[in-house]
Image 1: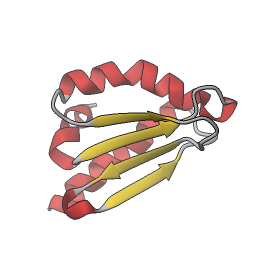
Image 2 (image 1 turned 90 degrees about the horizontal axis):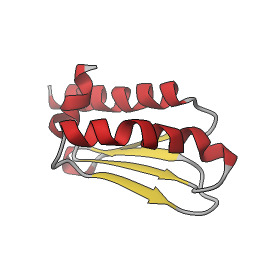
Image 3 (image 1 turned 90 degrees about the vertical axis):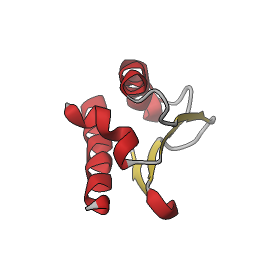
Image 4 (image 1 turned 30 degrees about the vertical axis):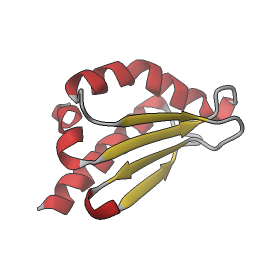
Length: 98
């Protein structure tokens, strides 16, 4: 999982948006609890923004150079699928730089 250390090289910001209590956001909450520390340790100065808002649909947003953003709706995804979505966004950032 070498891509984890590439967050700060390929993205400008990562935002994770979810509801604190809804069942639809449960896997997103589990993802944050299980992966935030590792991602932040590998990318200490990289902004990983966690936004909790009651009733909101779980989403993942990546901001690239020049203000370009890409989002993924996370409802119905497992923790492993969310991890894959983050990896895909990081990989897309590497492709944008090439």
